[in-house]
Image (cartoon, rainbow, N blue to C red; front, side, top):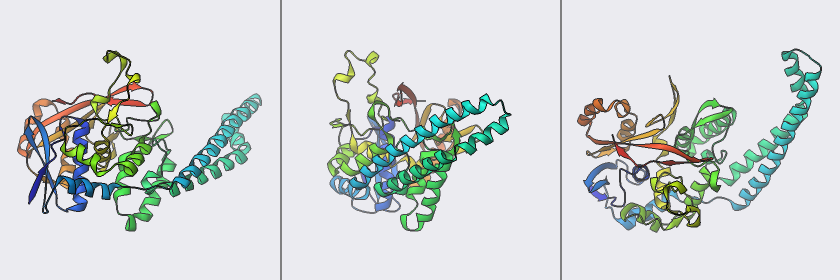
Length: 366
């Protein structure tokens, strides 16, 4: 079994840890049975083990071949037009609802009768919005290369929309594999909060500062080259790229109060390869219902908690380790993790920094 160290990755950086796991998922497609461990070399560096010859250029090229996605630009334009129609119909329905509700309230009827009259008089407007919504969904399916990506760009969907996408994925699973289902389970859980599905804690961009969640992924999948992956995996991060980021790197916290000058005057750098591979790690962090409400695996409140281990272990064992309850236990109980080969546990907080945007704090050993 050969090994290769991913010397560009720092396991104490949440983006670095996610990048390592995304690399493990992609490598498992190429070399079934691949394993991952961590090695202390100034910082924690991931090491990949596989029953194949491993080289930096070979891995970078293979990753690009596996992850590259093309999407139909014409269908994307049609989707933009369909969204405008849907927004217009939704506004009509909202305005008409207020108008009709005001009229009915003046009649001083009982609440149950008021609701019945409201639904009865909004039939035409509801049908028009339903048609526009169906057309928008069809354009989405044509524009995006995978069914799990054919959801609202920032995952702002209702439980009904979530179920529709899930049903389509289940129907397509025999030919598409389980990746789309795993990604959808990582995007959210079918529990509504203020009318929308409860989404993953990893959604740090939500339309604020012109950053959107799924469009960023599609841009990376279409534009990232082997060089982007090689730089992310094997070289010190230089942040030469611009845009297409999920804001999982603590260095992207560029608030004015923390800097000498206004950060808007200098463009923020990013690592495309690291961000793309980190997104590929999301299926290892599914959203699940719990007795305390919906939760994202490896999160405790607003903190992301992750382990560093020495033994080389395969992807399914890593997935089990991420969900281990002792990771989120009191520090005094974490000695019980030592027999599992866990050397360190890190935590980083999710920090809101503006409307629709969050950042990670720097990872701290806990």
